[in-house]
Length: 446
Image 1 (spheres, rainbow, N blue to C red):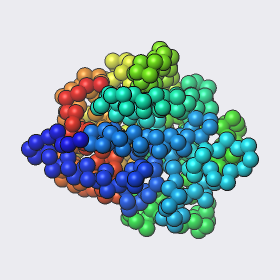
Image 2: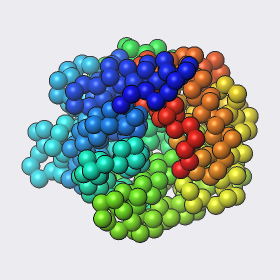
Image 3: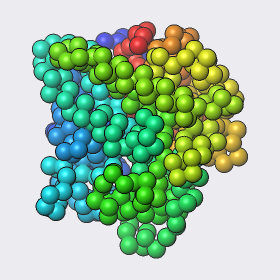
């Protein structure tokens, strides 16, 4: 599929497409060649959205590659490991997770080597958008293959992970949110013992490639390994999490995307001959549960709830803005989220998109991963939410800020929230993919 643009954006289009070409392995697309040599779950979804514009066959192959690693219980792992990548090239790798391959008899393990945790379920939305780009019989066949697998993913999250019993999915690890070291987790993580000795048993690959000041701290990482080990050593069971697991939170961003997935499944259901009504009902139930459990009327945002204490974390983090993607959010709540987006805390500037954390917070860090920097995928989701709620002028302002960012700095993993300088891995796939989508669909709504 050729570049649909002319003029100054033609170069940007070709550069973004070239990144996706360079990160294609022949079976799937890696997030980047410098730090992420396997397939990541929500990366694959965002990547497919961009590939739909330039190589739809590869978009479907990325989604198929991911879902062939789906577990029997419906979970889609956050990493699917490439067996041709050596263990030393990424940590924690398959030896740490011990999921798949030589699994013990009777265990509900996946057919391929993977991690045992999940990531936000943006895959149904990605499948629907990919279909919309070329709604032919080939794409319809791909939807028919994916639909039952997407339904199983949603069923797993709605049942096995409803630890709080109120209709929201609980996360068992910060990595499941995609916002690894966000301040949203600080209070829940503080209750997890720190054992820095665990890092002496392993070697962090990330800080060998990227500046340590840009990544989660060693204390954070030690806690991450403690939590992951606890879930792994419990056999990845979900039935008794409330009794034994050290980290359990309800995340507004994750659950908003779960609700959006149900709405995408309703559209997919109409194509494949299934009943869309249950999907719409589940989306409405997720929206209601978010409003009931995670909304803070004082801040006007949604906040993470720690299921161990019942307390909502007061930190204003970007995942608290993501319910904007839900079309049936009440108007008053939409307006409070838009007010937060345009406030000094998150304000969409003329040249800068939304940061990952409240700019006015005392511990705001413009360099350290999810504690301040700008992330392209989150801003793309907010752009879609603004268009969904007919805030078209603000949506176009955000789109312009995002495209200006990659024109100036390139397709980095994330960006400095004040200067716009690229941080983390260069030639990052989801940034390139979503740049293509922004360039191709400037005026589309919904």
